[in-house]
Length: 485
Image 1: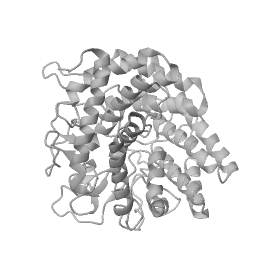
Image 2: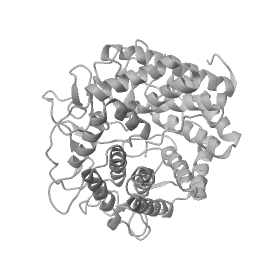
Image 3: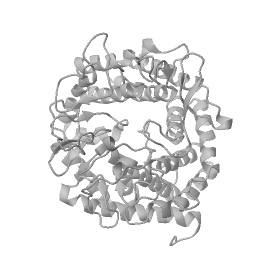
Image 4: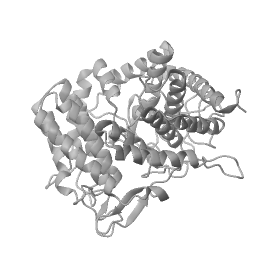
């Protein structure tokens, strides 16, 4: 039962619960020099030493037993900085600084320069080394075989923080992105790379060169180049930039991977959302590139706009809530759609794409993207959060409602229409009893542990942004988290 009643009470209570949760998570980080453990008992705050059974749509090879994952935590760290700057909670900013200073100096010294973060790797809090999610459950697990996969785009503010603490680690990471190229010709990259080796991956039956990942690498390289211009960084960025350009179809849409066996489900399948992700990353990267190379920056922008148009050309049916993530290159038959609720491995909820549409509108002033986002926002206002009638719970990972909150608040900031803020408040009222059964939120509704891989950082970010926007107005210096793309 809420201590306060109604939507306004839920918004205020949501901030109270986030503040309490942050305090408990920071306390839980004390034994680990300020780094947040990925798995916690939400009542005691102790790090879990055994892995609970995976929820639907979750893979054990993506989890971080006895570990920390900066990519998972960045939305929470950003919320802590916002609470310090906007709401006067200076201790939260100090705790976030402690975390990132520790990370930048103690967790980045790898053979490749790539960090132990993302989808398959983490920082092992007990052993003080890069850990492998894929090996954590194997009896013969050994150091040295951890795999780098970005998982999401690293936001600008995080690169700026890491650069301030340790500029060399940013440059070594940029150099390490060379590890994502595979052996053989013609040149081909893979979303996986070795962290504690400098060898390139052998070429496999599938390319696994998802378009969105090249956007992540280009953004990383553009930032590094803006800090320390070097010909090798620019050449690496150019290689990733040109990689997909010749592979687009007549509408500007890219395949989910450039090379798949004929009997594989990805063979000749277009990925409009991955194309969109790359396009937005290019438009963001162009700002850094323009500082040293205006002509290249203009080419980056041109490519990005073509990819954005490609996304809009996909056979979406917004009126009937058909949101296309995969379709056949020939004929456009839909192979995969995004749902409103219930993301699983390999398929995000549509909130993340709609939120990225708001970002695309900010970058281009193209009203088609804001219209796309509005239509999805209407669906989130109208569609109740799924709760099992028998148990009263739902195993929806916390990422989904967190990003949905960010979407609704972003629509309010863009349009000044109060219905979006009211919709976000109504959603918050539903979420609090489902995710905050203890001081630290659960990773998904209906489970009894916190797990960073499920996205509770997004939920706390969304609740924070909603409450601060309701209190101080839409122009607060806390943007949405656009990294899930």
